[in-house]
Structure formats: structure tokens, C-alpha cells
Length: 477
Ligand code: ATP
Ligand code: MG
Ligand code: MG
Ligand code: MG
Image (tube, rainbow, N blue to C red; front, side):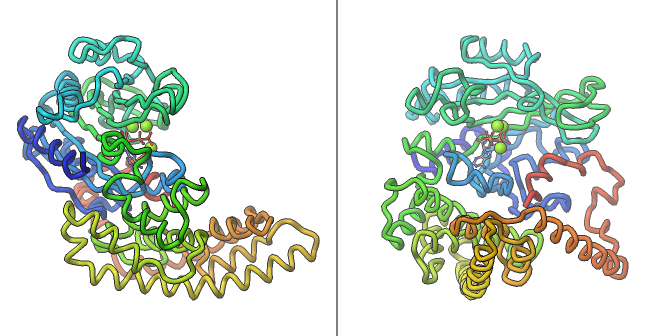
């Protein structure tokens, strides 16, 4: 089943059950406290918190997302993309647990011939919040899931809140068992690689009076209107339905991976290190393409810096695969062709996108050449001094003058058998940040009152602004 077909079935299923189909918002979130849209619910935050009355009781979407927090997982786990699509269904004071569980179960287990996704019931496990007996009971009753495939988990995994006093509630997650070839028995609690999380159902039912941390909060009582927020990973369902091993091998991603393999002459599946690099390339090219389609341009800070980092990691990975010539002119069209049916803008805007991407690659290749000779000299000096650790100020110079991200320096140093004095590097970075902050502060005071950008701030509401966990995901780089 193609990714586009799963998406179509999703929208048809929820659209046919009273949900207003809402198009994906931009990856560049309207919310000034978030760098990117990190979940399907982000565009609905004002309705979910009750700040703005929802214009419909039920909605559904397939939302483009970026999670930079997952960048280190990419290519190593089977299931994390920096870009992915989250299918969501939402209820604003309308149906609650029974409705959400019923819909999820029906869509997942209805036969393909009846418009469903055709999963075998026996392959599905669920988790519930440890004292959410109500949800466990509904799973047994509505879905007929035996107690042995319902696991109870605590606050860290199965309780959602914004990080601020306000709405919160238990979650229930649905997992697919890939079978003994992928790991030990014991359900999702034991192994999240064998048991793949596909869908998270959030039941917003409590008012939290105080939140001191992810797992430390007080429940003041019940919300007057209870909401449902769910997110299903489109790529995860696609890779399970397509019978491939991981999300980099689905129809929307694999063509880029294959192009990387052709260009490098390295066969996918022959060497683990090479495979990870090809998967990183396939993931990052797609994320960069989608970010650029939403107007992000490479830069030294903010969103543009994350895009720059994705592009540079791609180029760097291709070099590690042995390709020294520019590669983006080969890789970007492959991603465009795999994505344009769902997102026509990647086709219509391709000239603009590709010009900017290819220019970035050329500049980086020049930088890389300059930085590599500095690094080579420093490696020689370090060895001569009988040390195995590259100096922090060298790493800082490479970062500051040659645009080498620290992980690139560390990777290149380790190829030469050296570590990097990370402590000294971090101190120099902190000093630089402090200087930049002082500088920005004096400029900001002179130019603008930033609160004007946020209607929510202007309204004096702060309930969701500290959306800590989402924000942490978006800004961790
Ligand atoms: P995981 O534990 O696997 O990192 P999560 O619990 O962080 O996932 P949620 O925040 O619950 O994910 O997001 C809802 C759904 O979105 C998940 O059930 C999953 O199917 C999908 N998803 C989350 N992160 C990614 C990602 N980086 N790439 C692809 N799909 C993702
Ligand atoms: Mg995660
Ligand atoms: Mg999870
Ligand atoms: Mg989850």
C-alpha cells in the first residue's frame, strides 16, 4: 500500500465520520515559541486549550512535522525521520475515550477491501496510563484486546501536558509486533524496535494546577470539556504495510536512498555503516526539500541553521560514501519525484528550492576543503605533541570560521584516531553565545517589541506558551 493511499484512506475514514478535513499547516509554525511544527496538534493548540472556540467539533489532518530531537536516531533506528507526516483526529469537547479507541481500532483492523488498513488484531498491543482503568476496559470491550496485550506505563511515557498549568491527561499508545525476528518477547515496555509505536491517543481530561516537571504535577480536577488529540505516524504505518524493514525504505523515501547507492557505487545492505549513511542522506534530503518548500533558507541561526545542518550532513555523508563531487543535483530531483504527488509545491517551486540548495552545497564543499586542511594540520600537531585529544580552540575555530558543526569535527577527528576536548569547546561556545545575546539585546531594544508577533501574548494568555516538551524538541540543536 503506497503512502499516498494510506493518507487517502485516513482522510476518507475520518472525513466520513464527521471530521472536518483540515489541510496541513506549514512546517514553520505560527507559534513564535516553536521553531517547527512538531506534531499534528500544533495548529489546533488554541482550540485544545480552549483559548479560541473550535470552529468544528471534530477535525482530521495529515500534518507535516519536523523533529530535530530525533536527528541522532535517523538511520540508526528503523522508525525516526527528521521530517515525517502525522495523521491526526481531534475532538474538541465532542467524543472521548470510547470514540477515539473505537475509531482507531476500526481503521487499523478493517480489511483493506473495506477501506481499512488491514492489520491483524493479534499483532497489535496497547499501553495505557497506569491508573487509567477506564481506557483498559474500553480496549477489552470495544477491541477485544486481551489483558496480556495491554501494558500499563507511568507518567514519563503515558501522560501528556503542556508543561504549564492547564489541560493534561493520560495517553494510550498502539504498537505493532514485528515478531521474534526483531527482538525479545515482553511487549513495548521491553522492546520498542520489535514493537513499533504507530499511534498515540491523548485523552485531555484533567485540569493541572501546578506543573513542576514532566512527571511532577498536581491534578486539580476534571476539565469542563474533554478533548481528544491523536497522532499516527504515516511513515511508520507505510513501512509496516509495505513489508520493508524501516521508514527509509518506503516509496516516498527509498528513491533517494537508491540514488545515493548508485552515485557511490556502494550496495545498500552490504555494510552497516554505509547503510546508515544512505538512510541519513535519504531522510535529510527529503526534510531539506520540504523545509525549503515552506520557505526556509539556509542561515547561521534559527530554522535556517537547522536546514543548513541537514544539507551539510547530507553532503558529508555522501563524502563518507566516497562521493566528492556535488551530489544534491542528483538527489533533490529524486526526492521531488517521490513527494510531489502529495505536495505539488515541491515541483512548482523546484527552481527556487534547487538553486538555493545547490548553492549551499557548493559553498559547503569550499568550506570543507579549507577546514579539512586546517584539521589535518591540527591532527598532525596533536600527534606530534603525543596527545590523543584535539584542542577545544581548534574545534571552535573550525566551527566559527569554517562552519564545521561539532559532530563533524568529532567524526573527522575520530577517523584520525583522536577525541576532541569537548569541555573547552563548550566553554568557548558559551562565551560566544553570551556575547551574541548581549549584542542582540541591545539591538532588540532599539528595533521592536517582539510581543507584537503573538496574538496570544497580546491577549495576555500564557497557558500553552511554555509548551516545554514540544519546544525542547524543536530547539534542541
Ligand atoms: P517514539 O517513542 O517512537 O520516539 P513518540 O512517542 O515520540 O515516538 P509521539 O509524540 O507520540 O511520538 O507522536 C505520535 C506518532 O508520530 C508516533 O506514535 C509515531 O507513529 C509518529 N512519530 C513520532 N516521531 C516520529 C519520527 N521522528 N519519525 C516518524 N514518525 C514519528
Ligand atoms: Mg520520540
Ligand atoms: Mg513513544
Ligand atoms: Mg508516543
